[in-house]
Length: 474
Ligand code: TRP
Image (cartoon, rainbow, N blue to C red; front, side):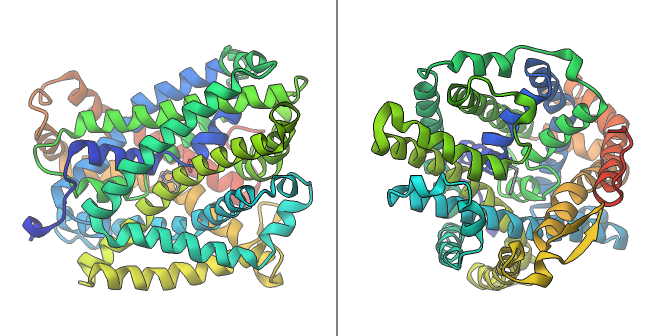
């Protein structure tokens, strides 16, 4: 059985693929902006603590489940629980969630690709005009971009684990670092750049309240690809002598480092563009930052380096975001792909075809829910506002179900699969694990406060999203 399962060819391949999954659009823009708005360095410190003390144990647990079972999330829950019906439902959630996240992430990646394409065609001035984004997302050209993105993702995935995912990550991740560092180096030379850096790193502890803490933790959790079944699936492709404990640390460090460095690109750029920026007024949404605010800023660089120069910088920026998005998209589609291959016994090609049709149809519907089709645009209303199909998918799967999935992982690993088995699995490839303080901490935290925290986040998200009220007050 598991002997003919495909595996990553190296530990580095696995780490790059998992880090590629974790590094996404949110790292590059969402993280820096919310750090700046919520206490700068104080937020950064809290975020790092959350990554190390709350997210890492969950990450290790997910990876341990995947490697032990050598299966997709659905198969892993079933195999490790002795086919328990109740835990099969958790497994099902572990596959439906990534499937639906793939849909909403595809929509955004398609827009990124569109902006990248338009920039290379010399249309940066168009992208920077205020009405452009609204018109762009309702223009039928998005369907062409969608076809191209779908082809790229499927070309990577059809290659399988080694020849597809691993190879792509080994090219895209180093390229991403180079693009990011070159943009940081350029942006830091702009006037007023240091004002941005100051806002980003100087701590303001007075901003830290319960809702900022909740935000920081949810962000850390999502950013690391937790609760999405991805790490479980990717870890099912590594060998028994690989060290999960250090692998998980590397993934967490890479993801956080990219997010941190992205701040050294975004904040200086914002403050050089407008030295009087009030951080509190920056948009919380990565989407409006990337598609509305940043194009204006990128175009303004023409005063310095000319239109072509500004277009080159913009092109590098959109390429960077596109690479980050593609590796995340590939990882999230791999989860249902693995499930169809293993549970429905389809070939990889057939599985990808089925998914291309299913996610394709839903993505088209979501794409049309920004005004093209009325009933999709105003699909429903909750939390005091009209919601489009895109909003519904985002709110339910990205915001609400993820912490629930994380909670289920903790409960499953601690109380069904049991601590000894987790320790046994983590000790494979990490000889000094048993008896170490890491083991004690992982077992203690996963069985006590981490599930409680995830439960609180889950309840609070349901309250804020769907009932327009919050556990923490506004
Ligand atoms: N860090 C990602 C982002 O910033 C969030 C994420 C992690 C993600 N894993 C993912 C998104 C997989 C989509 C698919 O966007």
